[in-house]
Image (tube, rainbow over all chains, first blue to last red; front, side, top):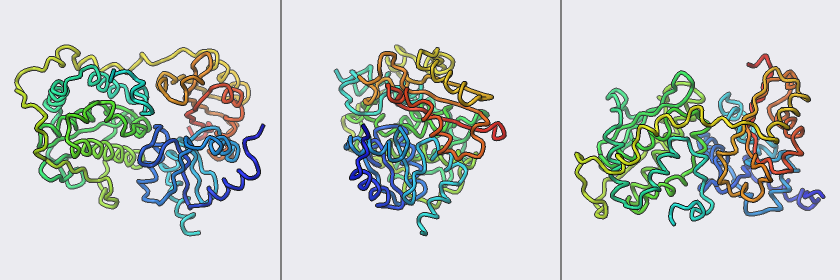
Length: 110
Length: 305
């Protein structure tokens, strides 16, 4: 059975586009409840980029739906400009290479 | 009862912390008396390698109301982060030393995973003033920030002027610490004698290699077969997440929940990182559905190595 109903898909689409940068994480930006989510929060704070944090531990439907919507089985999940960008490993790697900064800038200017 | 894991609720499990920080937290949890914890901090402070005065710069310096802290970070040969710190206040120096000891010698990603929860785990909150507790967390933030900058630049961060939010740790020297007893610095604290500090120092290397269980073997076989890798490392790091709230009760029979994968394969040619990771997740979807909780993935083509 798919967790992703048409209504939920619609909700998620709005959610990932609610800000230029949206982070689906365990806990909140101020109280991350997982080291991997904590890592992405630090990176985003370091970039000084405004972002929306969504605590997926507080909504099981959202949590299951997102795994399908993003085609990504774990959290955190970072969305930039409405597009899935990656999890913790990819975000840190992209920060290292400067690709993340580029993507964020592109999204901010669009 | 304060040392039983369950009383910490949803705090970051201690197993996720760097090995030396784990040892320190366990040491602090093993004693109840604030005085003993305080003395241990003083001991760390006294043994802190002095920071060369050339590094007590504006970039590394942190102006507080009265006490000041300096933190510096650099890579060792294996790209592990090494910290040095100093303070003009003995207690603050002890806190800085605790972090230097707990974090030094670890890779950047591991340092970035430390959440502020560990301050609660230390059980120092009752003995420290709120401003000092904040100071400890700000120090951690600055050290993590320096690690992040190191990862990008590979060298000492010297241009931290731009974003001020976490660049400055301020630890006001307040008089509200009447509950902290005066101690004789010359007397060697019991705690130090009992548990020692030397054995903390080489606890991490070697002993953490875990033989693969049945899930680990299945993962290795599957990736071997489907990706024809020229290099494949499958490392079971479930022990680091044993206390993880999401893992308890859902880990299945074998408890193999967290793995580090390093795969070098031609199959990744022309694929973005997201596509490479999705490819791996797809191959392992049966495992993900049966209790595999998280993968840390390095996926490269032979040309990228």
